[in-house]
Length: 279
Image (cartoon, rainbow, N blue to C red; front, side):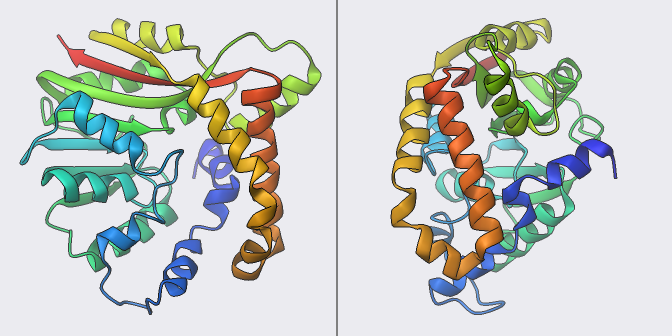
């Protein structure tokens, strides 16, 4: 296991990947029960705004029935399953961490979706992808973990059919870091990489790989989301402690406080949605 892989495992979400099974028990499911996708999607979207970013990608890329889609940084497969369920497309869910991959495979199987969602585990940069294999690529809050983004975008470019499209939603740096408090918060947030690109950095990286790019700045929505999540935390804490224990809750709260500072008090981090077409 690489050092980067090891560091990424330390993020609070990934230390508690089995949490999803506790959540399912709260809904009345037992081990190995078949799952309803409509129940699971309330629990398995490991990013901001639930299924809304996936809906945005469907609309912006015009994903149709039968399309072949690559989901980069699939986590436990939430966006991949929702995308396949909504559009009847075929999704390859690519995930770096073995524990996330294992849980994702189990959930997909229990949803009866192995025919439409294929899980692959490994570094997307070194994963063997066929040239011109996919119609679309999607990724939500995962690319910022990748150190060698130029190589990644070249890999994705080659994997797309002519005219193929990408929709990426990512955290973006809005300004230069100004003091030690901002730097400490950003370092804690990034965890396993050293820098966070700006909106223009992402645009240029995609253009250098050969894409035509449209940038949507969604920083205001990220600011509202991170503040609201922090402001409403006390109303959920007792339930979370009962379900998941103090370790997870304390770690989760530290992350929530940090992202609220970065997106609101410091104004260092925002969000971007990048739509790109292979030309």
